[in-house]
Length: 84
Image 1 (cartoon, helix red, strand yellow):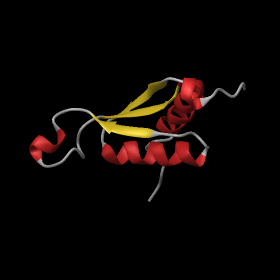
Image 2 (spheres, one colour):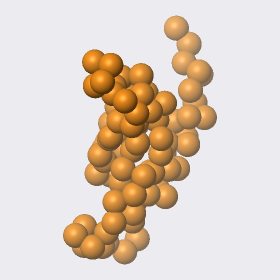
Image 3 (cartoon, one colour):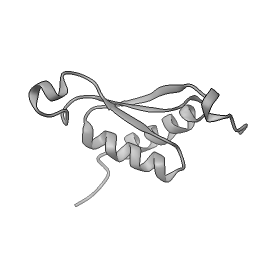
């Protein structure tokens, strides 16, 4: 993979998480993989005292977006496979 100067690498939405908890999980996994992540809530948010239930966008550098999407897709495939 060719390394780009982060100053010239656009930031893009890699995924849309259904809520803050899932967004935090995905962001944590991506950071563990060395991908810089920014999470932003969409929707009314603090107008109702919390943005926890709102959809959250996961932003990454464009050069890492496809890798981030693959990782998130793998996480989504395994959702529900955890036994308690």
